[in-house]
Image (cartoon, rainbow, N blue to C red; front, side):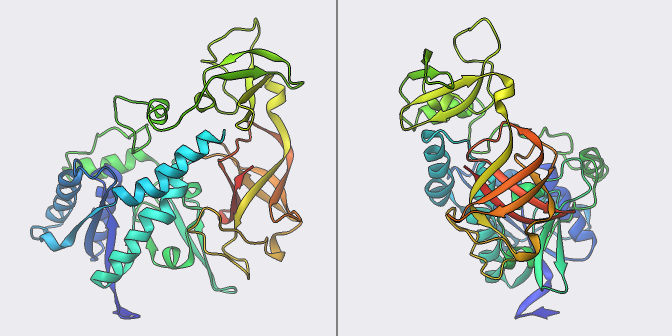
Length: 374
């Protein structure tokens, strides 16, 4: 069946060579979809290309399909695009004392941009990934939303800035799988060699022999400066603001006789403020570049500076807000500030709201908005 000239039975999946995307391909094949694979190489070396192609080949063979023709595996050298958008944003954020989430930048600007472009080129209506997430269509408003999956590894947070074209064509084959162990079991029963492959714990663009601080030091100048207290008193010397994030306690390089935590980072005067754990708690968090899928004046979310105003139906009501991927959502009311930013007023104080991270707003299980924490 055709949908705007595109084939509803054809899907383009992001294939990395990992167990999640491989099982996603297997599940789509078992449902009778004509599955194509897209691998975007952010290094320009092609190191993972063969692994990704082999993963798709395995999925086809386990479904008694013929060998995957070369034209069903699409390789994209995305190095320059990735460097110019994601790496640039990552480095600039740290140089300004912020802590970005590269996936939230990459998804709308790189990964799903290429998925849509290549799907259109090959005539596929659907796109998909191995994310643990879901989608939701509101019949009354005609708006598509990202929705939580039941998985304990729910990754909806990372997809908060996707636009209507991407969400409306998305299929998440793993959306109903509650545990990663189930995905691995499916892969094992299918005989996939990557069934027990460990998840990547580092950033995808940081080499295994590095950490992100090493990566930053190669690209960002970050001179030493002063540790100060809340009153501005100099306590000691720090080794450069890129080495610190809000809430950090270990690795300060100096001892104070009591636990001290990073409570603020100021790039303008090159200072890092230290305080107690109690100083990290607040019930008010502001965010810029807000994006609301349901806003009448909704802006395109694919640019970091995009922003629009809170839809009327979300004002003054209790919503659930996450301040980082690894925390549980907390109840808050979202208000619009005169300068265009939004503010979350929490029912209970939250710890270590970190500039650069994303404030993601849920109504029940649905992502209804987001912004970058100031």
